[in-house]
Image (cartoon, rainbow, N blue to C red; front, top):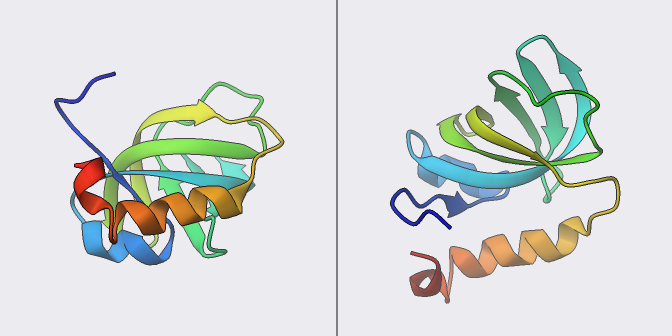
Length: 107
């Protein structure tokens, strides 16, 4: 695991705290176009991910690591298919812990 460039675990609501910084999130794919994917965050907010998308076929859930460009857009550096079965509520709770009481464990 590369620890030289950490990324913050975020859901849709937490992205605004990290604009211009490296973030990591999981989205449920709603649609895709050339150069972008639209998805639903684990807290049900819409996120647009720009950049060269992963090789099709896309699975229902994608992990994206990249730079938060705004409170609802990421410039992707890394895409990972997470499959078609994923528990977004657990990931959402992880994001809350990683940005709250236990933040020191995720730095």
